Image (cartoon, rainbow over all chains, first blue to last red; front, side, top):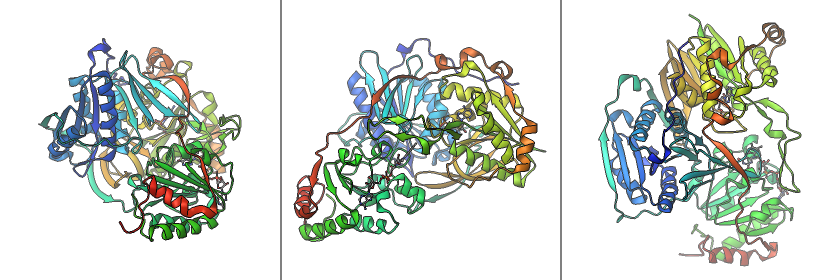
Amino acid sequence: MTEIKRADPPQDVSEYKGIMVYLDSFDGALTRAALEMIGVGRKMADKINETLIGAVIGENTKGMAQEAGMYGCDEVYGFDSKELAMYRSKPFSDILANLVFEKKPNILVVPGSKNGRDLAARIAVKVRSGLTADCMEIDVEPENRILIARRPDYGDSTMSEIRCEKHRPQMATSRPGTFETPVPDSKRKFQVDVREVKLEKNQLKENILSFNRKTEEDITGSKVIVSGGLGMGKPEGLDLIRKLSNLLGGSVGVTRPIADLGWISRDHQVGQTGQIVRPNLYIAAGISGKPQHIVGMMDSKVVVSINKDPDAEMNQFADYIIVGDLYEVIPKLIESIERVTGANPSAA
Amino acid sequence: MTLEIVVLIKVVPDGKEVFVDPVNFTLNRSMATNVLNPADENALEAALRIKDEHDARITVMTMAPPFAEPFLLECLSRGADQAVLLSDRAVAGSDTYPTSLTVAAGIKHLGNVDIVFAGEKTSDSSTGHVGPGVAEFLEAELASYSRSCKYEDGYVIAERELEEGVEVVKIPTPAVVTVVTDSNIPRRATLRKKLDAQQKGIIVWSLQEIGVEADWVGLRNSPTVVKKMLPFPTRERKNKVIGVDNLDDFVKELAEVGVLKTGGN
Ligand SMILES: Cc1cc2nc3c(=O)[nH]c(=O)nc-3n(C[C@H](O)[C@H](O)[C@H](O)COP(=O)(O)OP(=O)(O)OC[C@H]3O[C@@H](n4cnc5c(N)ncnc54)[C@H](O)[C@@H]3O)c2cc1C
Ligand SMILES: Nc1ncnc2c1ncn2[C@@H]1O[C@H](COP(=O)(O)O)[C@@H](O)[C@H]1O
């Protein structure tokens, strides 16, 4: 039997300094999730007065590296190769792990996109450190520079706080949409170091045969979301939801049971096992407000609950509560909006 | 040559039976029974579909206490050929690092394996770290988030379901494939196979048998530690009740707080 290889744990954790953020990209542009993680990293870096290091891998990373600087990184490392135009698990994780060995960051945050999670899980094994997935809160304790990672518990209304005290870097991922994207500043000072990489044959065994872009809309960037739950009772309820969301220039969301029923694709599901959204306006119609749904929308700016039950849990999480049958309330609301806004209420 | 396939499974509490108590907002686990992790059912089915087409042998494997045995038998009844239970007191409380390590050691102990299937994530811990972690320990190729895959002359061709679209990748074996929940319809057990499963039984390996030291695993040797439980964070909300007959004022208020633009501009 061949033996299992394990990396050595750090001798002295105080050697590890700075915060590294992996910058996920698609089609030559940083993803929104990458920008969110720059924001998270920047806050921690300011708190403990340390450097925020960005790492981006792709075909031509210079532009992305500069963008990352404007969004808040102090030092950005780009790794260029024609073979790296799209994510490939092995070379990407090798490159990032090497940068971790070179820079010895105390903390490494990675966007929790599918590819980001693939990468982070491999790095955790390569460097032998602790990784916490799906964090809702990421912070650092100034006294000891320990990462505080909080994630929701399974099917529960509590969160666990998870730490990694003996291994470095301390790692965390968060689902895309969990945090606000920072505001870029074109006057920020930062350093960019783009390196050409030469890959070895055994790093390039994965062959990408094709890529088909999704046509389903992505609701995570919407300013207005109107969501329907089981209170709709029948699939036609979604037509009403759609009518209101169209009028407001928004998107349609649903609870998990609605996606389970197959009334609409899972891309529209909001919650712990769906999308995390933070629109300016979230209207929940016929939704009871279970924690697994709430975690997906709790950072919305203004929340409206339409529910025939005055005591629905959803109402606690709402700024405005309209008690009534959604089949009566929504048509009336549509009329009011048309009356007040002159039928042209483009989302603010 | 027979393809050697391993399917990694985990037994988890049944999500449908986990209730949140409406009075004190806490979880009621007392009703919860155990099930096979949903994504692992799809992983087993993905493996069985390869076996439908090729000469293959499927081993299901889990690192768990003995209570997982009936679930391994269930997998045999669906068409797996062999079941391995990695069971050892010392692994209790392991996070994903020691879990990936132990499972990878179990796979190595089996001998040459061509394809390892895992679920994209478990429904209870939901990290999705174990599949990629195993690939790393085995130094195998990896296709994560696969919704369908096939085997062809030493290669796995897998459709990966990503945020932006669907990617088709071709990787040589040995390969790890993580399978997306609901990506196929798992077949049912047959009575004949159920009887065979009882006959076959389950192989149980301790850490020592697979060459893993007790001080590499378990709670104390896991890099991550759960420090405390906190109540779910809440946000300040206005909780203002709006009369159904007063919606015009409500719409004006929405415009005032800046989440809706009013007419013409
Ligand atoms: C591990 C796990 C993960 C989960 N992940 C998610 C997730 O990502 N997203 C998610 O949404 N759920 C998720 N769930 C499910 C979640 O726990 C709830 O079961 C679900 O959110 C409830 O959906 P609902 O509000 O549509 O239905 P219900 O709870 O049945 O609520 C229906 C509501 O509609 C109201 N109503 C009924 N008729 C009308 C009417 N005519 N007009 C107005 N109101 C009416 C009722 O008063 C009630 O409040 C998950 C569960 C588990 C265990
Ligand atoms: N204890 C375990 N034994 C065997 N396989 C496991 C175990 N834990 C997780 N897995 C596999 O890894 C996948 C992802 O699990 P997780 O990383 O816990 O979300 C699961 O769907 C299983 O296929």
